[in-house]
Image (cartoon, rainbow, N blue to C red; front, side):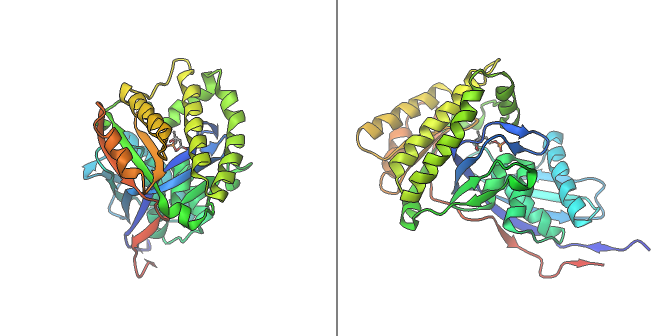
Length: 341
Ligand code: PMV
């Protein structure tokens, strides 16, 4: 007789993260091995909640994204990820994945980090596995490189590692009063309807064609060392200056790819100019930009509202949210009993 498999659904929540030293380039695209390390800050205002239910009645995996059945491309990415979990857990059945992004607006802000971290946690638990945080981070990385960092709260260091089992993220200690006072002001540019180059393709294209890519790769270890030193001292000015410079270097490599990958819009540069002006006026404000037109400003609780009001009316800025520092990915609704019989 075929054994009946009964698995209870599990819901997990993870926060997005913003890199201060960027991940931009893979050593191995199939395994999502980063070419260099990265450093990020997890944000409490941007969360994803995901429920995974393995169900023998399903002929294939189902993905429901913010209430709508997902596009085949997105579903295939989730199926490839679930296949890793199924292989590890010895669970051959398909799953229904229901995921909801609690982002400030339909913004086009990267959700793959929080998405794959929440999926890794919910899917492994729903399949009856309890992974150590490091193993969970390695698994999340297979979904999206930046997701390895969203397994943890606070500041997070992603190691590029020599082998797949060495490419994991781990939390970095910082003075507690420093972390609790930090804020990220997130300026959404273009209302999220902007067509973007997916980061996973754009970084590979940059690596293959940009004359600046080698300079970028040489820079990252130096920026990591300086950023970690600034963090240990709780020196926001040094950390912020590094983060802004590192983001601009990442974009320099992308802009000089052939053909060019340009994420910036006029409003992106207008926000950047405002941030630099605020800084000249003595405010704590440093900008970073990812694979999209939005600008995130590293600042303190003291200056966050002033920065928000200075950028909210810039034409092209469609929403501005202030976020504090987020915590580890967590299970929010776990099965009391998981029976495999
Ligand atoms: O993990 P991915 O494929 O979403 O790539 C993230 C790339 C950046 O957001 C631009 C940088 C980073 O380190 O998060």
